[in-house]
Every structure is written in structure tokens, then in C-alpha cells.
Length: 374
Image (cartoon, rainbow, N blue to C red; front, top):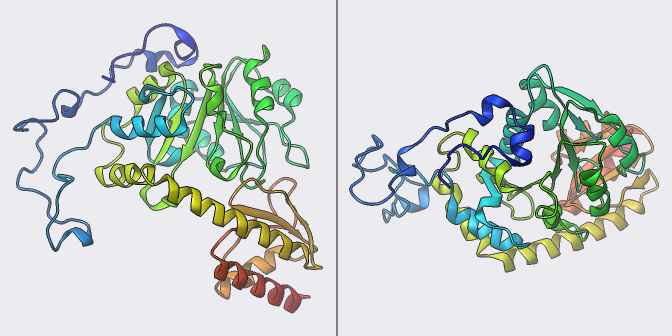
């Protein structure tokens, strides 16, 4: 992966902005050499001023923090591609600062400011709208059904010739619900839409419905976003991935900042990918706690509905006063999210599945708070 301009063929060349295709990527020192006496990058050869706390005594600078990291994180991408399978190689994987960096890059690469648009399916993740606004890109919407299903025909009808990115959040946030891969395929193969289908799978490891990664080699217009923030329990390292056709990923590498993923993040990420048994154990525990929480919420007379969940959180509707319940609970030490302002989510709260102790505290305070307000 040498950061050279993308070939003038394929879907990426057809859809990307002309200035992006003509871009000559910044060439950093580590593109050429990463071993030897390195006097090429104006680094501080005397070493770092400090290290992570646990590496101070005894002193352990095995990451050589005075040196710039691999600009393309090839080892990490290879490991992630191996974990996700489906014949992926590191050339199908972009690594960035959470999924949010990938969202922003896709907008910058494929959407002309003031001309093109993206299509979202609310209620959905708010960063699509934020990134579009920052990049002066119009947002068109086709809401999900009241049961949070993708209305495929209506979604395709809503798109137009200027729609370059169509975002499908699956499992959805705040909906908790996974979109069937068959629906995603219908969008990807439709002659009504010629742009890129971006499937945001932050919560996919909690779902039994499979990943759209399985569609990447079949459909070059499918890009999948994933993260280590949720199931892997690594929100603090800010590491995410985009999986797609090689030409799309190459353009993302061309446009990104030179050293966007730091050495500390990449080491922890690699360690996590070598600890899949722990991942599976934690996911199993969270799913068990989720089912217990569903049963207990359904037993409360002031809870009207607990929506089915394919995620590590639940969306549930109260009879009334959801906003007041949220605020009062937060002021008393248990913080959930009020989602009542979202489409189809009136009087709804969203709660993350915590530890057994945290879940019990939540249930206790929820009942106490609601009954105290009525």
C-alpha cells in the first residue's frame, strides 16, 4: 500500500470527486523506510519525555514512541481482515479513529459540497448529519417504518442522481434492530441507485443476523463500517475500520492524515484481536444480561414496550414523563439516554447493558423515580 493515485477505473473512479482522483497523497518518511538509523523524519532520537504509567518503572519503551507509527497499519489490518474472514485482505481494510473518521472521509471523497447529497434512514446515528453539515453536503431522509424496518422501495425512490452515499445503520442506533442482509442486497443491486451503500455495523458482534462484510466482494458499492468500541470494549482507544472494495479503500488512504492511528492504539487493538475468546465470553455475558433486563422491564406496569434488540442496549417506551425520568435518574447517579425526540421514539429511553450490579441499580432507580414522579 504505497498511497499512489487510484486507477482511473472502477466504481471509486466513477463516483469520487475529480480533485480527489487527481490528488497526489502526502508521502511521509515511513512510506519509504522503517528500519535502520532513521534520521529522515525529524523525530527526537533521545526518546519520549514520558510513557504510559505502567511502563515507567521499570522503563519500557518497546513501542519506540519517539518514532512515527506505520502510516497504513498493515499488521493491524491483516489481523482484522483475518478475523472478519470472507476472503478479505489488508487492502480491503481502512483503519482510522473510530468509525467517525471513515464517515467523514467518505463524505469528503464522494460528495461535492453544495451539489451532492447523502441519504439517511432515521431514526439513526447522528454523526451522518453532523459530518454532512460540516462538509456542506445536503441530507435527504427516508424514515424507517414504525417497527424500524428499512422501507427498501421508498428508500430507493427517495434517492436521486446526486445521492452518493446511502447510510444504513445495522444494528441501528437508537433502534437496536439489525437490517436483513437481503434488504441491503436489494439496495446494492438496484438500478435506481448508483452510489455507495454504507452499512454501519458498530454493534454487529451482538447480532445473530450476520455481517454485510459478506457482501463486499459481491458488490463493489458496499462499504462496511465497524469499530472496537463496542463488543471489544475499547472505546477509549478510538479504533475503527471501513471494509470495502480495494479502490474505495485506496482513496480513503490517499485522503487520510499521514499517521492517523497511533502506536498505543494499534498495540492494544492487535492484542484484542489475539484475545477473541475473551471477546466471545464478554458478548455471551452481555447477551445473557440483556435478556434478563428485557424480562424485568417487561414486568414493570409503566413500561409500554421494550423493542427487540440485536445490540448491547435496549430501547423502551414509558407511559409518560420519559424526559423527567431521564433527568431525575441522571441527577441520582444512573445515566441513560433520552431518545424521545427521535422519530418513532416518543417517551423512549435507551439503556446500555451494564454489569449485573449496574443493571440492578438501574432497575431499582427507574422504578423509584417513575413512581415518585406520578
